[in-house]
Image (tube, rainbow over the protein chains, first blue to last red):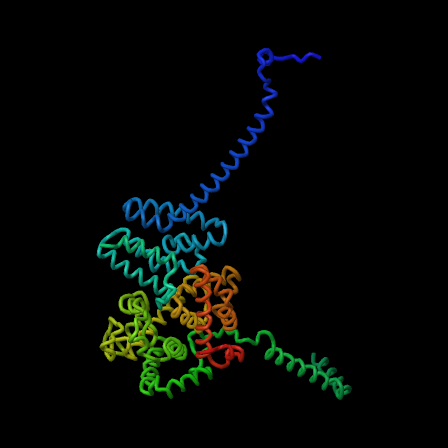
Length: 187
Length: 319
């Protein structure tokens, strides 16, 4: 039975060019190799990128806020704080795990206490003892009045977490919050 | 009706020698069983909901320290000369005046000061420690007393004026003028300031419960206030959050109303560590939970009436 070739195949056959069917097995191997390597690299990039994004997004919480305050000024600080607020609100509404919940709760306690659920006993203290002081400092930053408010806020937080000022110091979240408002209230 | 009664009496008369004594035996045995059940039953633990919540001496000992070990230690302190009779009397008179004014259980304040400094009003005077004097005050405790009293009860300022005849604030740890009424090294000043600071912790905790509409027993809230005095209100509230989350609202209500449940909860090192891990890293949380449990046990065994102290609790307590 004579094999019917299409004009291209016929031309290949006449010019002793290897048939496309002969090449395809080698090409397939190479293609598969490229495909899986590409897939592997894509996955590697994706996971690396997402973890980097996560670290970056976590660090926005405090260090970025502090950096944005010293480099980008108030507008950058308020914009980053707003971003952080929406991120914490999402985390609190559907935490992925207990670590994330603890993280979000701690940041909310010191920066966005209104986001905490009413069932949280700490909410009342935060809403009364430092949230109004933070708002007042943000309204009149870098003033003598802001520094007086900061001193009151600092006292409230130390008395709340570690009244004896012992070796444990403050929690990471409390001390980072104080760093931010210390910077913001510096006359 | 009368006929029925007559018939019954007749029946008693006929079979009286057997039926009547039998009934008496049944009724009495029932009563005795009920009494034994009440005395030894599972609810014999000191769970209490006294109707009069203004009485704060329900749980606390009239004489203190209530624990024999602390009594011995107090005698040793006096024998060694670490606590003079004059200082002890001055502490006691200032303490009674302050606790009466602020409605604090005297045993609790005495035991708290004993726990903090072994009643040494000059504790830390030659050191660079952050916590000083009788009630181990830090710069932020002073700040609260000197600048933030408007947030708390007006009785605090009235106490200062009543004790010293004027407002002696600002109070500070004045090393060079220890007898000044503004110095925390002066005994009446230290006792009054510590009582106010403790009262503020109580006010803070009770306000939270009142706002949430949760009933509590004042005696237990004073114990929580002593915990907050030593380790901060946050440690107490984190524990409350954890108990409520894990065990539900009913169990939480039990925690602020039932001494036995309070004792079990505050001696559960796993629960305490788990709660404090929400604030600090694991190492700090473990160390803090151990300190908090020991502090609470010591305060309880020193201040509570022996009626509420089991032999086991006493044996566990090491001053």
